[in-house]
Length: 353
Image 1: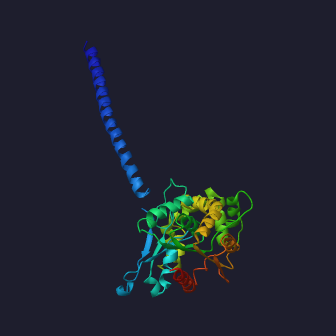
Image 2: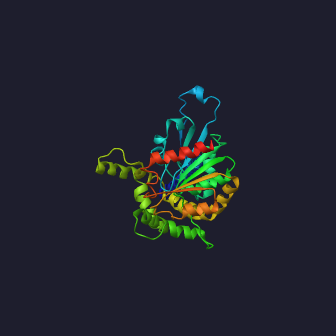
Image 3: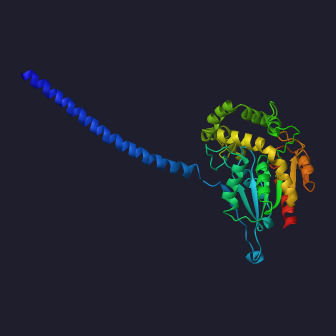
């Protein structure tokens, strides 16, 4: 009898403990469900704040109003600078900005932009980085906030594609556009984008810059491995380079080279440099009708973009000015000849103003 009583007590204890555990579990997991739902909304807002924003990063060099009396009543001219592939606004702030004359610094407001996915600008993973995406971000980060009703554009390499799209959309506001080493590829074939890929990222080991473009453009997953090793850990590599070179200040191009994600670089390459090729004729036709001043500068030893790019622009826009610089390549068309380039730009802006 006593044994039966003990078994009965144990059974009720088990039932009671099961009820308590089940009840406590229901309460705790109900609380966790509610908490998870709250954090779902919270992180969605956080993600939108950090990745869905952060407006493009823009470096603004305001007018040096040395003589306020001389400047009174005059409107500031705005110059928008767009960099090339795997670069940033420092391409301009380290080259052109320091070499402009004092007179130019009193007339022009300079705005150098980090394009979407590069430099210090946002690098969202849910973006395809199309020409339209780049243009809309420039509009929301530069054109609208700074109220640019009139402006000039200076662009290098890939930035030329975005610049032409932006200029065509705002053809009544753009005073001039300077295209430096523009990747303008024409083709009689239907798929001009594939032609652009074969021309801009040809499968060649030399020169090294072209090999790098080819490797990263044709091999998505191998390129992703490179980006994961180098770009993801860019601060470590920068530290190693500083130790090896005994130089605390690395060249800005070495730093810019890693300031992107594989996603942003891959899609920009295929959707802007290649995908944008099929829209280039339409952009140029729009600018030709609007009589926007177009200035093309290209190096005679440029091995990245086709040498006929400048002449192709001239054929579409007869009034365009094309200048071929002897012994200059894709990079030295700017770096190393900053003063000469600044003189050319200031003459262009001055003739229009």
